[in-house]
Length: 160
Image 1: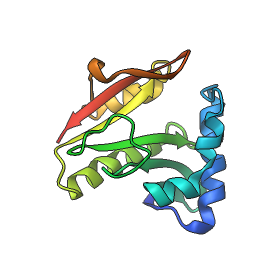
Image 2: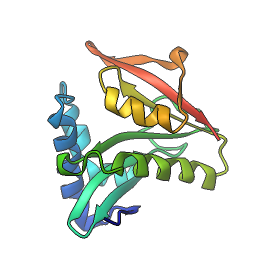
Image 3: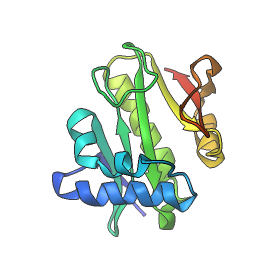
Image 4: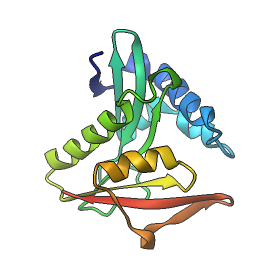
């Protein structure tokens, strides 16, 4: 299987939104009104960078890369890259899609001349944590935070 990583096309925004909600819902990760944010792919594409993984069967996953001026940034400083909302459809899990999307974000950070990339992940997203740790990300507990009660986010960073 050949996985292509590219920016989402406007014609794909609705499908990307649904894919992201499906990916997070699959494991029970949608809390509060977060589904609305996950579904808003067109807004993410306009205010950040919306990347997808696809193969001949269609969309497999997506991630939002948040440049310095993006309203979607959560913990990134001006000299850091940041990504969020990485989701992979159930049928593509275990095929390296999450790793490929994360690697694209790392490469994008390098393209922008930044020396570090950061991100947050809910404490219970242990499968994702293994991907990040395998790629060299380390925890930065001083940036941990909680957007709503019951959702604690751990911060991770990778120095490039």
